[in-house]
Image (cartoon, rainbow over all chains, first blue to last red; front, top):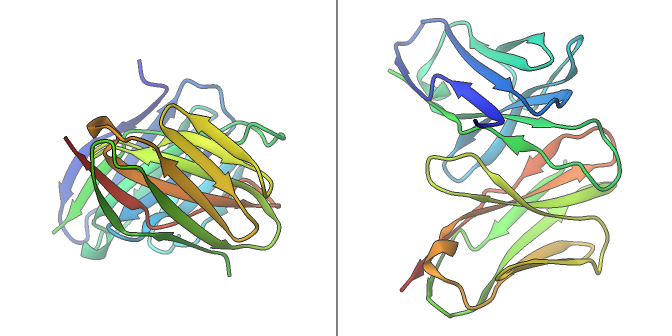
Length: 115
Length: 110
């Protein structure tokens, strides 16, 4: 089984609809992240959470919200989707910061299309 | 503002033709430069972390190096299975947030 799973894998929706993307992990990591990826722009951080009670905005949080329901679950919501939110969305996890072991592990991604 | 720039954007290689990818960065208080590989339709897969100038790491045909301003990913005698997008990212001293470059798409033809 995959360590970081995302649902759905693909979603097509219409402008104005509310959408939730879900992420679950079995790695036991305390830190979780949401990124979006657009062609040529690399990955940009939307929100991140260092534990269940800690939620932080990333560089492009406008139009998005998140919920950390448990250590293993981190969901991303688009309250009212718009076409420029069409992108590939990735969830990632990492362990608590310590020297020599800081890599982030990524899920398979959700391809979201907003018409 | 932190910036990470990767070049070239795309690279076409013949099998066995060695080459290098560049990742230039400007960040205050670097606390790690990361290389990831991403296959189409999949999430990035971790390759290397480099922490200080002069450091080198190798994995199969890949070798990553780091200076104070840039990192190189050298691909030696590439095979078609090395075809992927290679991403680099930097981490600042505070927190564990990564800033990614735009990636280099590598295509290795047999």
